[in-house]
Length: 331
Image (cartoon, rainbow, N blue to C red; front, side, top):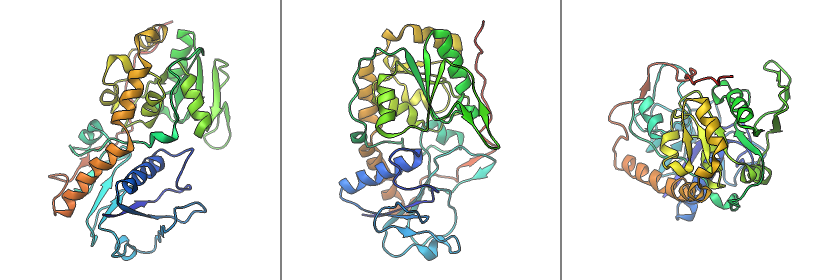
């Protein structure tokens, strides 16, 4: 099969160190090639891009730019309209306002789909060969937070409270102590070790040596690569039960999901109840790129047979970016 991925990211692609959606798409394309498919990309001009990439021209419609080459087109951005080729669209984010999606839209977890009035989803997978192997042993006294520190619904502030109360340092992968500009801030909590926008082997090493991932998000997380990356490297997850998290943390040995900060603190004080090997095995076997590619293949086959992926067009009645409640720590 000839597959054209449409990815309008503004940074370089492939993104080996940063970029969640970009890494998922690259892992998907790599797995598809290994399974015998031909793969190309339609994307914005960048200094780094795969050989044979078609360059996106915003002055032209997709129909004008997509040639006869592909059997199926896979959009990784919102698309609705006429196209001469069969296509699917993966929605990687939560709706930021009331909106309607194309009937061939795929979401990235069951809850993500349900929140958009759909039952069509494929879990994100990654090429785990890039990550090395977990050590399953850690003598460190820190836990980690993986995400943009300035994004309120990721809740780094809550993670910092939980870590300090439990007697752990917090390593933040995704922010600096000082940020300048319109959204500038500074954080003087010396219990936090800001690692900056760390990626690649440096990121993997920090995660491997961590005692746990703190993920007390305050929104319905669409998927959460930070979760599966941490699990693969043998790190249990302590977080809130919002969005995809109950679909990923499926066994008690993998972590704890609760809206009560004090219960999270208690879990960090009794980490021996979790099993790093179970964490690794579930991420390795369930959330890998080969499984993802096979599930997308089933979606492609449906649209090639003239079927819609959703009986009706998915939609959101309002923004899904509002903060969800959690229980604050007691002094």
